[in-house]
Length: 256
Image 1 (cartoon, rainbow, N blue to C red):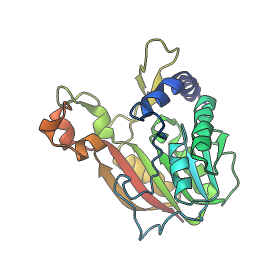
Image 2 (cartoon, rainbow, N blue to C red):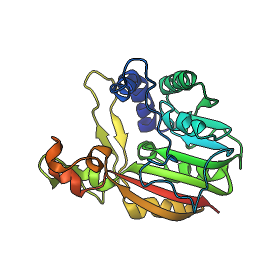
Image 3 (cartoon, helix red, strand yellow):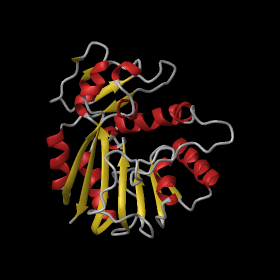
């Protein structure tokens, strides 16, 4: 593991409690915190039934699972078995707690997405949500994803949109460099010992990396944040430019 990757892991161990508290902040007393699945009807871009006719009974792995929300949400839809992998032990602790609160069957494993502690050809479905932008060796991570999927397995791969990452929303100007893949350092909180390092790869680089890893890319969805999709510009305090820029990218790909 590189120094930057190790620093990211340490940062997530520091940040995990605060991050998960923010995730749960809108949860009312007695309610379960949200656990959205990338395969749910209301997932960004919606389901793709011509590529995947549901996850019930299918072996599923979430890569960079964080607090386990995607794993738990997909287990609720009937996937079996369900495995979540993350390099942060603190995030895995939260994932297991969320699993127990929902009462679903899911296994969470601490491990790195560039060296997955999983057998070949084990899964029919995989996803990664806002995780691979923190991985220095994207090619290795995608090769490992391909390795654990059987032929014809479906991979839903989401990262922040590089244009959104380069945007300064308040001034509505491009402050970053869309063509510079990084690394880029982000200070989450001055009280933390580590900073977050990300890599803002272009659409072409992401698509090419998937193809080189042995995937057939079938869909590319550019979607806005939920607050933008659900409101009009005058109804929120969000900068107006956010209505004109996608927040995230979502690839649907098939392992060849």
